Structure formats: structure tokens, C-alpha cells
Amino acid sequence: MFRLEDIIAATGAEIIKNSTEGSDLQDLGYSFSTDTRTIEKNQIYLPLKGASFDGENFLSQAVEKGAEGCFITRNEYPENAKIVLKVENTLTAYMQLANYKRKKLNPVTIGITGSSGKTTTKEIVYSVLNTKFKTHKTFSNHNNEVGFCQTIMTMPEDTQLLIVEMGMRGLGEIELLSKFSEPDYAVITNAGSAHIGRLGSLDNIAKAKSEIVKYLKPSGALIAQNNERIKKYVADYSGEKIYHDLNDIEIVERKPSYTKFIYKNKEYELNVEGDYNADNAVTAIELGYLLGMNYDEIYTGLLSYKPIEKRWEAQDIKGLKVINDSYNANPESMKASVSTFLQLYKNPVVVLGDMGELGEYTDELHKCVGQYLSELPEAKNARFLTVGEYAKEIGEVLEKSAGFVKNFENNDEVSKYIIDNVDVGTTIFLKASRSMKFEEIIGKLEGEI
Image (cartoon, rainbow, N blue to C red; front, side):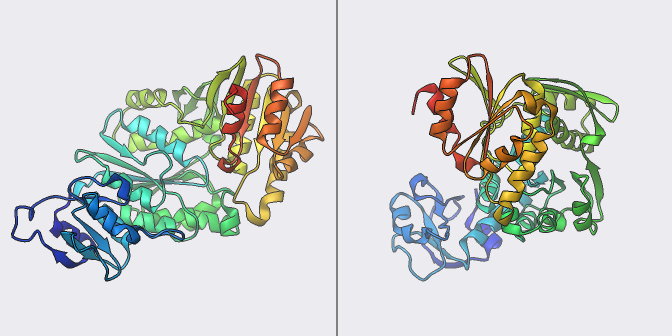
């Protein structure tokens, strides 16, 4: 909770109205709401703005529903508001308030970014660190500026470790999140081709991800993919740097929902498949040791990790085993997840959809995925079903070497094909960008759509 003097100290807001002064309300603590639908007692409404909405148009509704007051950027406000605070930018004010609370509670803060794998890595890191410390983390993939503020504002008073996932749409955004989170430790999972349509080059992607070190404390450490582009852009960071990749790991055993691996002469287990997940786990291992954890604690934390929804989510549907990994997709994640799937299952069906946000590189990068998969020996025993205009490019390359490739225009068509042609007992893998709505395929197979 924030007292009014804390809010002013954090944001520098101008007090336009304060009818609580000299009353019993003067010493109240306030929280904040950005949504008029969820206003609670002792809250101040903080109206956010976007390209297609302006929360400042709903000041009266917020006060009518119980808000004690509101922030404004214009000179209009409801007369019945007890407190009115004027700022230049409400999102900046929200981030300033979050930073104020982050400094007040002062948890050890870990920032995590990357082209892919950042949400999974965050969850694995949380699973490990939470075995010893009271740890708070970004919910799901709420990794933009607003999600950052929500993460801080929901942080319990006794939090010891804070894990902040940082996403970006362009240059400067990770730097902004780094500025307001002030991380003690930072993680860059990778710098691949995701969002290349926005940023224009792999160099710009690496540069954008490396902004996380701008406000990283020199007393902490950076843990990053062993990537020359990343190394170039973090060269000025003076603290410890730890680089790793799959070459540092020895995979001992691969099974569905299980991986055993050795890292730095010590054995670890994960109840999830994928060599790339073992690589993600290295981040958690390194952070664990940096924070004083012992081997048994780290081992237990890794073993307790469970993948979150739509990330390698397995379910049985009328005799078919369906693995849904369609929360998101980019060329690197598609290559890694499909190759893992092919290693684990015999005679499977792979359903691939379009990958988004690749800009002028869209055709080229879909073809690159097809070329990569065509070189896997296991591809000859799989059936590949592609859905969409761009995924068709994957299939056209795969046709030269894979056992079976067929393209479909939409989810309805591919669902009908599966129902009519795929035998009970087959394992099906779904991978596409979120915009492809592959959950519709699951719904069709279940008979719900």
C-alpha cells in the first residue's frame, strides 16, 4: 500500500485535489487499478492509454465504482473524486510506482529476456529458487511494461527473490524494463530470428536483448547464450558473465516427459523432454549456485518443474495422444521442439502452422525450417501436415526427403484429415504461432467445435 506522500515521491505528481487532508482518511494506504471493472476500496484509478483506447475517458465510472481518486494528464476530472493527481504520462507513473516498491522491498531481482524460451526459463528458474527462497515472478508471459508493473504491485512484502520476464517489440523497450527493475542478475536465453520482421536484422535483435545489462548491477552477473552477437553488445558490462549452450551439456537419457543430463560433472533430471530444456535448466543451475544454493536443493527444484499450459501439453483424445506446443513459434523453437518430438516418438504426425512476425524474411525462414527438418533422419518416418500459406513453404522443402507431406488451408481441413486418416494410438504434435489458433484442432478432435 502507498501513502499519498509515497505516491508523490515516486511520481512527482501534482496534487490537483486532496479532500482527505486533515481527515481520518489522511493516513490511508492506497493501491492502484488500471481497470474500472475491478475497482476495490482504497484504490486510485490509474488510466492507461493505447493506440485504440484511452482509460482517461472512464474517470467518472472509476470514482462511481469506489475509487478514492484518479490520475489525470488533462485538466478534466470528476468532482466527486477525493484525490486527483496530474502526471505527464500515466504509464511512466505506473512504472515509477513499481520501481518505488521494488526499491522499498529490495528483493534480489532477476531479469530474463530472449528471442525464445524466456517464459519456460523463468518457470524453471522459479522452480529451483523457490525451493529455498520466497520467490515472486511474472505471471504467465505478462512481460511488457504493464505486466512488469502488475508483477511488482502483486509482490508480497516478504519476497526475497523477484523474477521479471522482459519481452520487447523494438529497440529501447528492454532498456526501459531494465531501468525500472534494476536487476541484480540478468539472463539472455538467446537472440534468434523471432521478431526479425520488426527489428530488421539478427544484429538488431541481439542489440535489443542485450539492453538488459544497461541497468544490471556490476556486483551481479549476466547468464547468456554463447552467442557472438550477444557478446558484442554486452561487452561494456563490467560484472561477471557466464555463457553456455548445448555443447556444455551431456544428455544421458531422453524419454517422453523426462530428460537426464550432466552439466559440469553433476547429474540432473527434468520431468520434461527436450535438449533445449536442459539448456534452459543450466540458467537455473548457475543462478542457484550464485545465490548460495547447494546441489540437492537445485536438483530437487529442477525435478519439480512442470511445463505451463500450451507448452508441450500432452492429452489423450479419443485414442490419440496430442502434444500441444502451439503457444508460440519462431524458427529456433520450431526446429528444437520438432526435432525433440521426432527423437521420442515412432511414426508420429507433425502438424505445423505459420510462424508470425518474420516480416520480409517470412518465406526464407519457413523454408529454412523445412530444410533443417528434412535433414533429420527421423523425418522419413513421420507424417507432416502443414496449415497455412507460409507453413506450406516448410512442406514444399520437406517433400524432397520426408516420408509424407500434405498441406491444408485451415484448421478445419487438417482436423478432418486427422479424424479420417490417423489411427488410434498415434502421437500428434502441434506447433505454430499463437495466431494460428491450433486449439481449434484440439476442439475439433474432441468434438467440441
